Image (cartoon, rainbow, N blue to C red):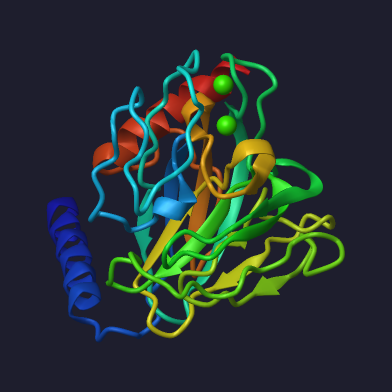
Length: 269
Ligand SMILES: [Ca+2]
Ligand SMILES: [Ca+2]
């Protein structure tokens, strides 16, 4: 009897997966939660740039598309990385949880000061666009996102730069509907009242990239990633509230490895 019930359960799961796979594009799916590790090298301005070959850290970028680097070697000699990407559909509601695990260094030298997804301050960064990806204006070095379609954002014009300083949108909005290729502040994912902020995927969106906006003094042309080190972990809910994973929860693939590290660090706190 138990065995038969288990079979029914397995078939139900298979049926659910098949239904999800067969669902027409553009239909909002049931919610999913992901754990992502964001590295200091995850350059938001390289979102979706699978056309690029990122030069060795000891070399400058060639002419054309480039991120500015330090003139000489940095202690870290970090090579920029393409930011991690999640699949989304138009109308999806994205929420992000900051479980306060890890931190990112933006300056020469390893370790402190380390910043979490909230970044530093409420203003101080004003970065220009790179090819098809918009600029960024707001707090220094926070977690940011950008929605993409299936194309490579290798050419402009980039959309307008959103202003997340107190004189603009600020960082305490409840809902935000950015355009494709328009970099947006995520921060720690909640308002000052501890309410999850909602980021709505625009028409045409198939992907969401999460990363870091950096530049010399956090101003001007994007770059200065080559002295960033460290990482932090966030939980991303698509059409559902992100939650802290329960110990022993079923996890799949690389996600499981990340979760194991996350749990280890939690226990160490
Ligand atoms: Ca830096
Ligand atoms: Ca550093």
